[in-house]
Amino acid sequence: MHEQCAGTKQAAILRSGVGPTVIRAMQLLVSFASSLSQGCVHALRGVELPHLCRLLARFSPTVRDTGDEHSFSPPHERALAAALGWQGADGCLPWAARQAAADRVDTGSHAWGLLTPAHLRVATDHVSLVDPAELALDEASSRALLEAVRSTFESEGWLIVYASPLRWYAAHETLRDLPCAAIDRVIGRNVDIWMPPDPRVKLIRRMQSEVQMLFYNHPCNDERATRGELVVNSFWLSGCGVRQPENATPDVLLDDTLRAPALAQDWGAWSEAWSALDAGPIRALLASAERGQPAALSLCGERSAQRFDALPQSAWARLTRGWRKPAVAPLLESL
Image (cartoon, rainbow, N blue to C red; front, top):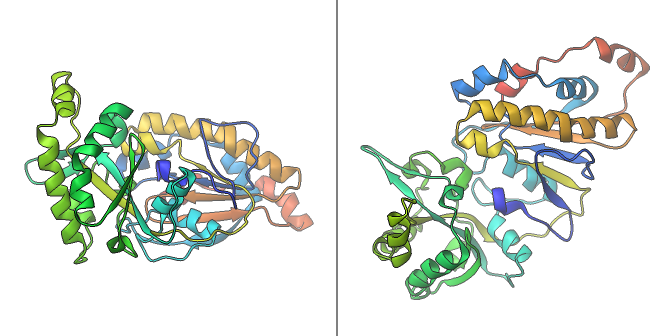
């Protein structure tokens, strides 16, 4: 979801950096707030998040979206889809069509999917997907690679559109309601467990094989290999479906600053990113609530998402909230 959640005309869904001190969003969504990794569990018990602690003492837990770590749609995608008013089964949220529209592609009534150029790393007993950001793919190389495989797709009746080095769009009827795992689920993991048992996936696997052969001796990859860079040897398909209408909701901010260190399992950097998030967007959201403005926070982990709202409180609740010291680490671990 990374590039998947860019702007919209109906609802200003934004992404934050390390932490602006002023937030326009009334609802803040934090992705990768926790992980099942033991390294993350250990890191959580050492990181100090004073503003989050104060916010949780003031806000009330409302909606909880409970899932598991094997769902194709991660909790932050489900939370954002809910804010947009979307409907869709697991893995069937049409992020590709939404992003394509933001990239000024005429999506029409087609079913779209996002093709992300990728490097599949072959190990002894499995194949894993490297974070595409590590490719540092430039536009010229990306366009050349896409042109090399365009006829493979178009011969099957697919429509192919280039948008950016890591965003190629495809439209085809087989992508309508096709469940696909978000690439955030797959990075660093065995790709086989994220291929759904759907007959239509056989076509995707075949096309992946054909693309791999075409990429194998491509001049761009030869040059990358000479420079010691990762080659582009496949693609990942995600975000399939037909574009859906969106609610005219208040601004929602999806903060993904925890994503990169979490996917890299760099828990030291992840802890530092959490501290920056606490001192920036979390602090600003708390300040908005203290000024009486509507505010909400959704913490999204690997399995579940928990929303907190700044609801009206009784005089007793306002008096006693300073005594409350929410246990932040156990809460995040539960996600």
